[in-house]
Amino acid sequence: MAYWLFKSEPSTWSWDDQVAKGEIGEEWDGVRNYQARNFMRQMSVGDLGFFYHSQKERAVVGIVEVIAEAHPDSTTEDERWECVDIKAVKSVKTSITLDDIKADERLSEMVLVRNSRLSVQPVTAQEWQIICEMAGVSD
Image 1: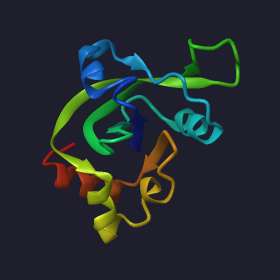
Image 2 (image 1 turned 90 degrees about the horizontal axis):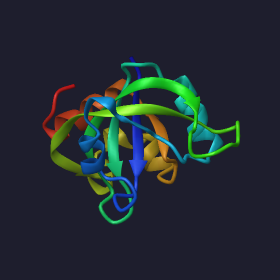
Image 3 (image 1 turned 30 degrees about the vertical axis):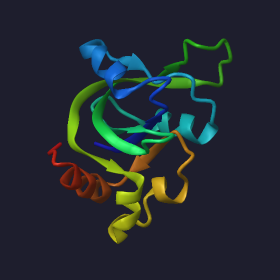
Image 4 (image 1 turned 135 degrees about the vertical axis):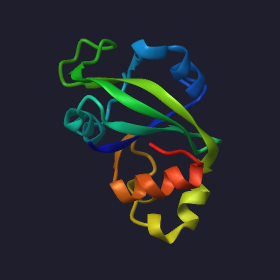
């Protein structure tokens, strides 16, 4: 199993929106960055990810599961763009902000710290465990 982080502007697609989709989940569409697209191509059904609110909140607010591997993004006719489908698994007990993550030196090499603009990014197993502990959840 691999771990990921999915960033979304809450005004566009929030954690509450994701939770409301239930078991059917939702396409993680609209990604127009090659590196992020390539990360989605590496995902497998059952992989887990953090749902991260960007912009003002800048915090991990939930955990999602990949429920469909990379396929054409339905929001464009351009064949270059693909996406995965994800569903909400659980909310975190405590939101973990970017400042919280930056303050923990064990997370200093995390992609989120080094490239905070990337909308889809990998998370190592160690980073996953640390953030889950900080957030008060078990995966």
